[in-house]
Image 1 (cartoon, rainbow, N blue to C red):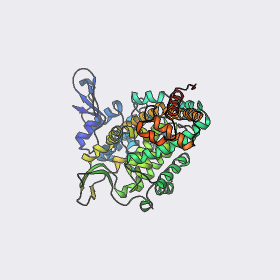
Image 2 (cartoon, rainbow, N blue to C red; image 1 turned 120 degrees about the horizontal axis):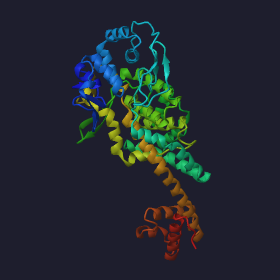
Image 3 (cartoon, rainbow, N blue to C red; image 1 turned 45 degrees about the horizontal axis):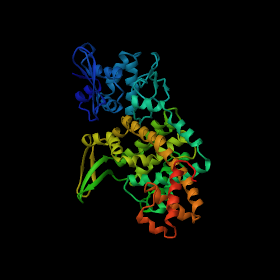
Image 4 (cartoon, one colour; image 1 turned 60 degrees about the horizontal axis):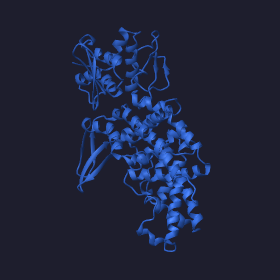
Length: 494
């Protein structure tokens, strides 16, 4: 027998993604099973709640991670009388007051109830199961609102072993120590190159090759990421105008229904992400901005805050063009504002994303794929997407756990591998440059070309490239190649 959130979904016929935990009453002992889309928790018969809807809701509150999408749909379906009657019967009950708070938080409708006067204050989210925000006291309900967002946009993140382990590594301190250990001139050159590398990789994710002007505009935007005001609509529109073709610069939020997809076989359109209705965008963006401001002014882990802000933005998709690049810009902005990335430094996260696009797509699909079967939609022959029914809650209260886990892996890879390798490369290049110049004092651009060609060919100049240096003797080239190899090992040539 199903219980908890899964029972609410089944018995109320809710159109929501399946809860991460599926609780069942069966057998004599409790046991757990892991399945690809979540976990099954099997409880003994003695743990069975009362068979009514209130019993299933109570079971979920006590035993399962909080699922706001299921709660929003369930509480709307159950209606105000269900919650009001529960509170009136159990005015001091922590779970009744929690249901009351969540009803008003998720529906925006106030119940005809006087403020609670008694009862121990209870947390909305269980800190043992969730990453929680800084608690705000709701005196009306006598609960502590420790949700990560605000009414209208509040994703949740489960406290998984993977996230806890990453947070304990203090990657920001590792990055700071690394940057402080290198020569300031070398670091300055590395930073300049990383801005360019991040920009090109961000465009590559969208299979675009920017012209020099668009590339320079995006680099300029990235250098200003720490000062970006997330809640300012005007600033977002100005950012979008900076990074897209001027013909597609926005004046406001989009007014058309858009989607993310791809064309196959020359004409067939495959839909990957269904975006919110245009009419829902203004309210969603306002709530998203409030959530972002709350996270950026809190002590919530910076990478987790960045994941919620950036992925939440790209799922709302408020513009016709440029959403993906702004999504990645917001990652850098959030990390910089929370002082996770060293001052004036940028992590080439997009480089890590490009290296394994399959895992990026898989992370995005944890949100987008379930929607395809839940939303009533169809694509017309002219590629216009038609959506029926209210879909806005799907974009407000999603489980962002896999997205936070994904982002932490990319950030870790960047700090532990990409950044050190970039600094090592530049150090090797500088040593090789001086070593080659000591043998033949060529023009700067000729030395740089020689080094790049050798580095890309295992330390030797290929036969096909030998003709580019006809002015050099074979003996000189051999000496230069040897000097480069020694420089790469941080040794002096004889």
